[in-house]
Image 1 (cartoon, rainbow, N blue to C red):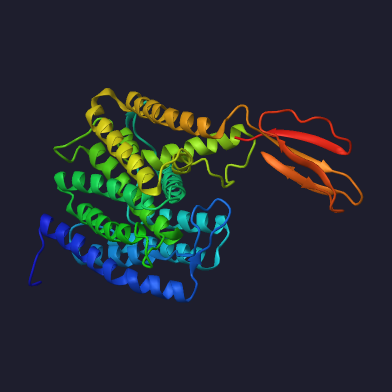
Image 2 (image 1 turned 90 degrees about the vertical axis):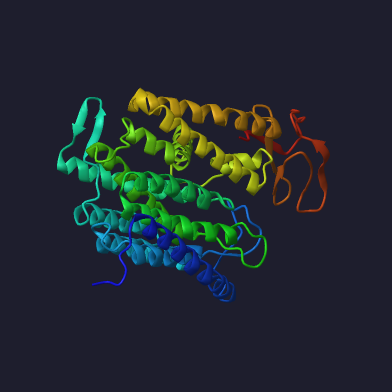
Length: 415
């Protein structure tokens, strides 16, 4: 017989405290080792930092979460060993990618494997569409396919928002706290403890991630895959509790409400991929069109952009719960429209700053002697390899340049 038996609130507090303590203890050492061994993220294309930053913050998150979670959930939930196994697979996959970089398809394979473990062995899967389009219970085979697909989608969507200081951590805290509070009120103390452990580890990580000193660290793929997976599992559980009506706090539009909780990564990923496809680009191509990039281009700092996005996330969650009665489809449309409305002023500010629609980039090919290639942007001086000056102080912004012998002009818009 154990000396102590934890009840609901005790398990939640133990998970929160245990995760915070271990994460706080682990991260300084991880930062030190990563800095010494140069296990860092280098500045580069599509990067917005200008110095080497350690990327193994996900290791501290994983250690803190696992400690707090396993310490508190015994007897409170089923399938703990299967969940932990799936989490370990994603942890080592993310760590390998942070250390040596692996091909994207290998990460997808690991995510699918983790999803298969959690669905087939732990029984965590969607079993109902909550009456959406008149469908309630769905076939078992379709249940597995939908669950595995959404696990992979949400993990990668969460990974894509990890682009500025504090954003991924803040979104993770908001999501885990929302699902955790709902689980606790529903009497599902095991998942409430899971959410508390994740919230605690992310709170501590956020302190290091937002710092400007030598202890600054990034979450990396290790953290984004682990956190994205945990949030997805809690989202599935959230929907299943409401589908089974096993709680006194039953929602009528649980899928749409859970979408509101995860609206930032889901909408941002949908928007960016849509833009890339419309422009004939690969949906996997990296760029700076994500919502956090747009806010930076609009003039926001990292902290202000994170604050705006976090407040928007909280607002969308409040809308989701308050309008739960209008139905899944209508609520989903409301959330989508609100996201578009919030993005319009951001686009307008960026368009004003970057002069969309009329600013042109003129690329010049200079052919003289052996030939020289130069790009004329704004006021530029183009010199031939012979050292002779070909064009001097020409303002190319919005003005069609005169024809110059030996020059061929190619024009393209900058968006």
